Image (cartoon, rainbow, N blue to C red):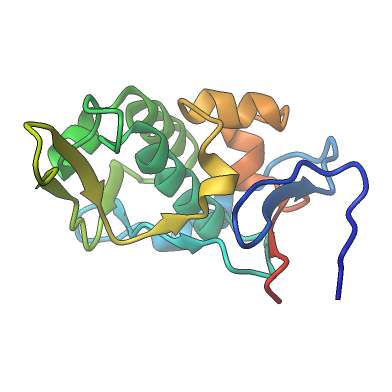
Amino acid sequence: MKQIRHNIFETNSSSTHSVSLTNMSSDIPNFEQLDSYVDPADHYIHIGFGEFGWGYNEYVDAYTKLQYLLTMILETNKCDFGKPIGIKSIEEFYLCDDFILLESIITEHVKDCKGINIIDPDIKLNVCEIEGTDEVIQYVTHNGYIDHQSCENYNCLADFLNDFETTIEDFVFNENVMLLIDSDNN
């Protein structure tokens, strides 16, 4: 069977993945959505990186959309093949400008929240020597994932937000902003 796609960018990947923001409106963000996720013992939101790439999934809840942005920050800022400078540890993740910005907006709008604490922060730097050469490749692995076709064209969180003409506040807190993950493998 031959599938013909009109007016769509084709890649050599075995699948097509997409992320879409839908139902953009001028509704006021609901900043109370994350209040229940603040741990009363330490006043932090404890959250892990998410798995985004083999949908079909629709997300409107602030917690999942926050997970997506945290994962996007790591995916766009990590040390990776051909990019030796970047995040190599959870400590470096917490010092990344994108994380600092996101955390400041969350603490500004979420009641009694002092910050974000990544659960399962297993960020590992892997070093591979290319056999027969002096070349060494470094790359980071972690728990969490955004399909490469949904994040590879962004250098930082601002690139992603600007591409979708949205802000952190609207993306996370506006219940009318839907994060749609899709793949043609379904």
